Amino acid sequence: MASPKIATDGEKSCPSARAVPGALLIGVVGPDGTVQPIPTRLEIDADFVDLASKKGVPEARFRFAGRCVEGKCKQWTGNSCGVIEKVLTGMVDQAVEPAENLPRCVIRGSCRWYSQRGADACRACVYVVTDQSMVAAPA
Image 1: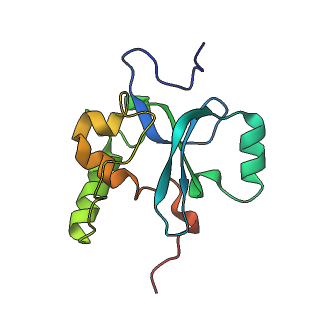
Image 2 (image 1 turned 90 degrees about the vertical axis):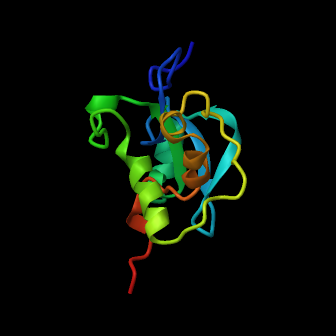
């Protein structure tokens, strides 16, 4: 039986969720600051969250997916997720090239961002770090 935190039949997944027991680990932030997707579905538990939290905010080093809660989320614009829209706009504004290839993804079939923006969202996804607190501020 799937965790209540994971999207099921027809529900959408949030590809930038918090590290809570029952969420899916979908990527690891690499040394270059981009997210390296993991190849298999890995549901995290309380032990993972506790261990990952000992080295700081888990969302600064990992990407997690959970159930998209739409209007209950502060990122919801009324009919879509504002995060991917901001990311795509920011990439254009800063002349950031999207990933050349579509990265592998364990949630693409249910992903909110993919359902909104298709392959463009997938190519931008690798640049999204949920918690930016560990990213150096510009000088």
